[in-house]
Structures are given as C-alpha cells and as structure tokens.
Image (tube, rainbow, N blue to C red; front, side, top):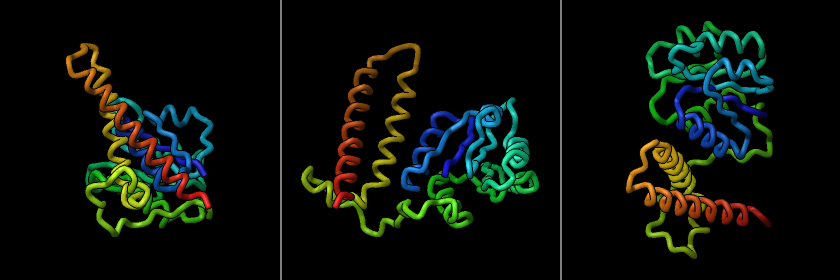
Length: 204
C-alpha cells in the first residue's frame, strides 16, 4: 500500500507524512505540494489525503474530483480547518472529511484503519495507546525499557528538527545559527539511538 498526501504547507506536510508512515508501520506516504503535481505523477496510490490550502493553485475539492475520476477505488480523505467543508469534499468524491484541529496524524491513522482496514497489510504493526506515563528521568541505559512510551516524544523531536532546519533557510545568517546546527545534530543522535534500540528490541 502507498499513500499520497497533498498539502501546500511546508514543512507540515513532511511532518504529517512521516508521522502517519511511522504509525502505520512504515507504509510509504508520499507528500506533494499541490494537486497538479500529484495528478502528474504515476497515481499508483491506494489512499489519498487532500488538504485545502493551495492559494492560487487547484483547490482540494477540485483535486478530489480529479483524483476520484482517475482512481475510482481509492480511499480519499479531505481536510480543512473550515467547518462544513464536508459539504463540498464528499460530493466531489471524498470518502471522509476531517476538520483540522492540530492532531491529524493520529486522527488520519485511526480513520484509515477504521474505514479501510483491508488496505493495511496484516504484517503492519497496529498503533497502540500509550497508557503508561513517560518515565522521568530516563537514564541512558534504561532507554530500551522506555521504548513503548517514547513514540510521541520521538515524533515531536523530528518535528522540531524540521522546524530548526527551516529556520536555517533564512538568507541572513544570524549568531544563533551555530547553536541551531548543534541542536539539530543532538536531535538526530537521539532519534538514531531510539530507532536502533527499537529495531534491536524487535529481533528475537
């Protein structure tokens, strides 16, 4: 299975795509910046997540209409922060509508699992609720024990890294840039250690 995610907001689309892929066990989620780019692609996706924030380009509702014509059997979800936009998305061909409230990674994952569970391979780990609080403090040698409670923290760190990298695109370097580079490196180290420990804990 592959999922296409179309949003005009960078770096948010990258963060949401990565978060959904992580929660669905690594299923590919390809971000696009506009509906035109998606429609010009191979369109070999089984699910489409379409926002409605494209300024002067093709709107999300029009995009859903075109996607439905080209992928009649696919699952399509429309998203917007504007109430009652389902009145436009659903007639255009969307299977579901999500009113944006800032937690669409979890909501979209649950929506896909609920509405189209057959799209998810049986080998894909299903997301589990985090019922236990994050241990504090976490000693270096106890990180492996805290893996199940650390998923949300790692996603937050990756989001912070992307936002820091975005801040570094400022054409006028400032005195804080060296500190940002150091912070990015530290985040990458923590995330890499986490995934290494998680992968090793999955091995028999």
